[in-house]
Image 1 (cartoon, rainbow over the protein chains, first blue to last red):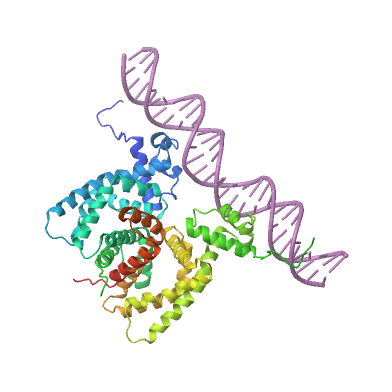
Image 2: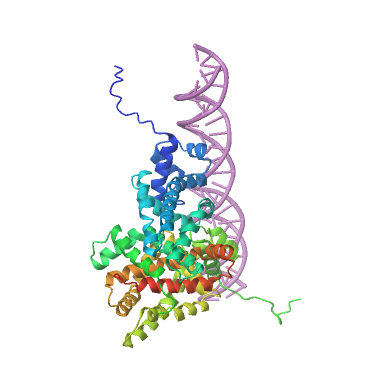
Length: 219
Length: 219
DNA sequence: AATTAAATTAAACGCATGTTTAAAATATGC
DNA sequence: GCATATTTTAAACATGCGTTTAATTTAATT
């Protein structure tokens, strides 16, 4: 009876990966603090204690989940930004276009990687996850500096300070769109009987942030 | 020894108000979910059980804290908006200028009322406080509709849908600026050795959202 | 002043959380 | 194949939360 020919399904996924995948999905859906370790371990079909065994703490798990994306996204972004260094003329749109490929590449991390990453980013900023902000700033501060410099080059009329603030407002609007997106879609559907979806939100968002970023101080 | 002539200090503040004030301060600083009833009652110097006695539940307390501001802000905003109805020509800036007086008037509710209100709003949106959003939508939906109509009038090139989304992105950027403001100020100070403060953030923010709101779809 | 109502208080309840423990099961190395 | 790590497991632990209870104190009413 030991028919070793077929081997139905013994995929043998490591406990670590099972935890990371389940945590990521739940974090992206509910937020970090709203998700309990018991939810995660149940979803991952592993023992409760294994999170602390493999990761040390919930906080460390959160960092591991985010890091898995950052380690793919940030180098990919840096590659794209380097291309712009050589170009003689760039505008804001070109800089933000650099995000597209790196964002899409996140789908190799997880099936719905792009969406998950943006929502994780949203919760990381809206919840008080100071350690995450610190981690990003220290681990990938140079990439962010590069981004800032390019945006400054694309919009030389603005000071570096201007760009700093506007970039973070862009982030704020984006994050907000991610976290509140679904609720707004529902309101829009009810209010305007519109067939609003995620794509609708993104299109409106891009127009908005492009306008905000290029906003001239004097009319 | 019963010198009733002087009466040092028997200010006699109601328990309700003490709770509301303490809760407001803590909510504005830490967020709703991060603040416990034990923190609140300790800060207010009242018994733990009095929150549930006077307000029924923590959720009801949150609503009471927010309502105290909404009941001042929304009518004040409506008054300002009515003025614009009579004017023949208006632009986005004029509409947003309508927020200024109502916001400042909140300092009569509490010493740092304006700041508190904006941060409460921020947490109300970024935390999953669905009941607050529902409350605002139902209690002051007409004022918000009025606001939307005026913004549409100020920018007739944009559809009502466009305005809906942009208005919410404005809200997102604002909320983000409030919640993350202090952290960003510290980064800015360290990064640019700038004497950045709240006022700095607001000025940059207004420029940004005005640009985003008036953004033209075709270059 | 006596009686009734309202407000305050200390204590405990029930529940959920992240974390730790110590024994059992599994995998690894010689 | 045995000894040794490594991993998994069930259970308990410690803590903090919102809420409830029941007794006491304070205020209001008659």
